Image 1 (tube, rainbow, N blue to C red):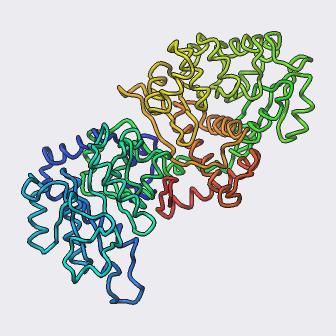
Image 2: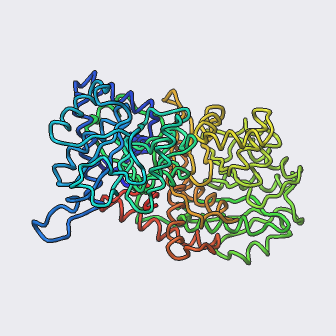
Image 3: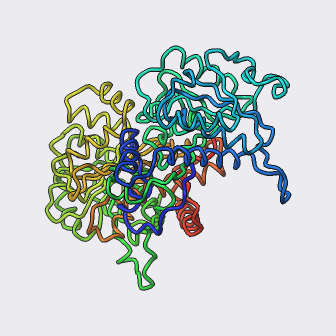
Amino acid sequence: MNASRPLGPVESIEQLRLWNPLPTPEQMAGWDRWTMDEFGLLEEVLMENASRVALDVLRERFPRDGALGSPDSLAGKRVLLLAGPGNNGGDAIALARHLLDQNAIPLVLTARRPDEYTGTTQKHLRHAQNAGVPFGSLDAVDWLRPMAQLPPEHDPDGFCDIVVDGLLGTGFSGELRDNFQAWVQAVNALRDRVFILAIDVPSGLDGTTGKPSPVAIRAHVTVTMEAAKTGIALPEAAPWVGRLEVRRIGIPRAVRFERPVHRGLLTDAVATLVAPPDPALHKGTAGRVCIIGGSAGLTGAPALAGLGALRGGAGLVTIACPGGLATEVKSGLPECMTLPLGDGVALTPENYEHLSERIPEFDVLVLGPGMGRDPETARLLKRVLSQEDRPPAVVDADGLYHLAQRPSLLGMLTESDVVTPHPGEMARLLAAVDSVDEATAMKRYADNRFAVAEDFAALYPCCLVLKGAGTVVAQRVPEQDEVTSFLCAIACPELAIGGAGDVLAGLLAALRGRDGSADLPLPTACLGVYWHASAGRILSRALPGRGAMAREIAHALPQALKELIHAQSQGHHDHGRGHR
C-alpha cells in the first residue's frame, strides 16, 4: 500500500491520525461536501483530479520503454472502462478522455443510457464524447469479446489489455443487484489475462467492512482518493483490493484538520515517535520492566516477554515467577533477573507480600505470560492491580483470562494500562462484559473489529491492543468525544505462532517504561504494534514458507526499527500491504 508523503515529521500520535486518516465512506463523502461548500472547489475539478491520478497509476504500471522521447507505453493499449450510474462512473469516463490523449484505445461501457446521466458525471461524459471517446452499453456487451463494440479497425481480436472498474464507489452498501453481480463476475473471469484497476473501492466491496456483497471485483490495483477507506485497508480485503494506492485529489488540508476522523492508519511514519537514546542513558534509566508470570509447563512465555522487552530497549528486566521454577526461567534467558516468589510452581496470594514491596521499583509491569489459570492466581492478580502505588501494566495471556472470569477486575485498570487480547481472548472478554456467549462475541469481531475495539475502549480507560491480521489499537482520549483508534494493516503469517504475543507484550512494556509512563499509552502501543509487525515482514523475507520461532521475532526487532527509521528518513511510507 502506498501513500503520498506526509506533510512533515510526525511528532505526535495526533498528527499521525490527521495525516494518515482512515475515514468511513460516509466521512469521506462529508469531506467532499465540505470541500465544495466551504472552499468552493467544484465537483468537476475533484472528478478531473481523480481521473488524472488514476491515469498516473496506469502509467506507473505501464511505464515508458526507457529511452527519452519514446512513446508512452499506454499507446495502443485497449482499455475497457465500466461506468456505473454515479460519480464513480464519472471518474472512469473522465479517465477515458485522458487515455485517448495517451493514444490508448478506450471504450466506455455505461450502466445507463448516456442521456440519463446527470450533474458532474454528465458534464464529463459530454467532454469525453466531444473528444471522440467511443461509448457502448454494459447490457449489450459480449463478455467473451469485451471490445466487441469498438469500430472494426480497433478490434483485431476482440480482447482488451486493461479493465477499469468504475461501476460503484464508496457509497455502495447492501447487496449487489443481479446485473451488477453478472458484470463483476465477468470481469473477474478476465483477471488472468488483463490488468484490472478499481477506482476508489472495488465494486461490490463494502467500504466500511471490507467484505464482498456477495461478490466483488478482484482488482490488481485499487486507486483510492485522498485517504484509505476503513474497509479497503483491512487485510482481509486484499484479495479484492490488490495493491492499494492512496492519492490526493485536492481536498484542502484544512478539511481533515477541521473535520478530523477518529480512526487512523499506521504507516512507517510511526518510527518518528521513537526518541533517540540519551547519550547519558544507563540501564537504570532505560526502563525497568517486571514480568509477573510463569507456571508449570509455561516458563517459556515470561522468558519470551523478557526477550521482547530487552530487544525493545529496556534497561533492566526482571521475571517474577514461582520460586520452584526460577532456575528454569533463568536458564532460558540469562540476561533477565528473576524474582522467585515462594517455593511452589504456581503463583498464589501468599506471594503478594514479598512482591508488593518490590512493585514500586519498576517502571512497568507485564501481567499474565504463562501465569496459569488457577483461581488462586487470580487472587494474586487482583491484589497487584489494586495496589495504589503500582506502575502501569500490560495485561496479556492468562492475565486476560482472569479478567474475563472476574469482570470486576476490569474496573481496576487505569488509563495508563494496556490490554492485548487476540480475537479469542477478546470474545471471552466481550462475553463476560455483555453477558453473551463467546460464539456471538466472535461473530461481532468478525463483522466489525473496529466497532468491537472502540466499544470496549469506550467502557474502560485502558488502551486496547486487539491483535490479529490487522491489529486495532484503541483508547478513549480525555480531550476528545470519541475513542481514537488505529489500524495496523500488516498481515504476516510468520507472526501466527505461539509466543509472538508474549514478545509483543514485552516490547510494549519496554516502550512504556522508556516514555516515563507520564502520558497515555496509545502512542507507544501504536509504535510497538507496528514495530512488531515490521519484524514479521523481515521474517517473511527470510522464511516465506513460515517456520519462524517466537524468539526470532524478538531478535528481528532491532533490524525492523532500523528499516523503519530509514524508510521514514527517505520519505517512503508503506502501510504494510504491498503487492498482492
